Image 1 (cartoon, rainbow, N blue to C red):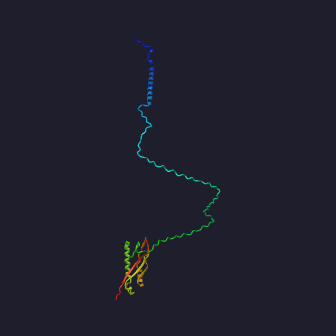
Image 2: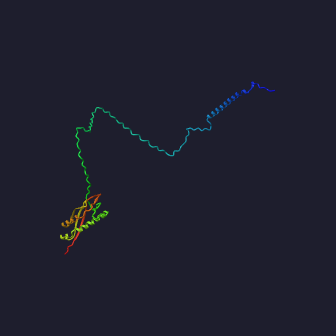
Image 3: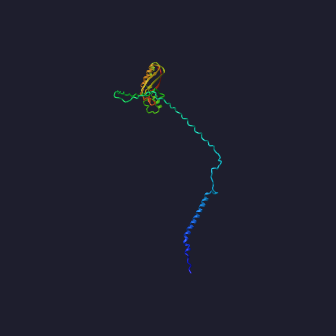
Length: 245
């Protein structure tokens, strides 16, 4: 005999209700657990280290810091006193005349300015012993040393005078023995022999010496600081007079 189910007590139709009810219960339990864990996390645990500003430690002083002195105070600003002057003083006004020409003014011709020649430096005569560039006697041009040219000039002047001087003149004048004649002359900045002077035991010897020295050839003038100058030259003439019986 088959047993028939009562439709009034069929539980299958209540399964959705049971499912929803169980789901609600589970969600409620899960939410309660989450709230409990959250509340436990907010409380301080025993393992938490608190850091405060109350830590004190003695640090040894190894070096004394020297602080620079404070800068000096700025100088006090001088107060400028402004004096109020009453505006009742008469001030003389300066009248500036116009520089423009009018038609009534006469224009004066300006004379030509003459060029002024600058005088060259005049160097005094220099002694032969200290001249920078010695005069050059004809035939001594190939020498380059100043001392060589000086020796060349001296030897040539002495040889010229010895050749030209009349040695028999002293004997004719009745002089005996060694005769000394001192001659001084100048080789000017043009190389000419000028200003010849002589001193001798007899005037006739002086005239002979002056005449012979004046006949010296023209030379290349000496120079001082690169400029031609007069050179003073001294020449002693010595000769011996022997009487023939």
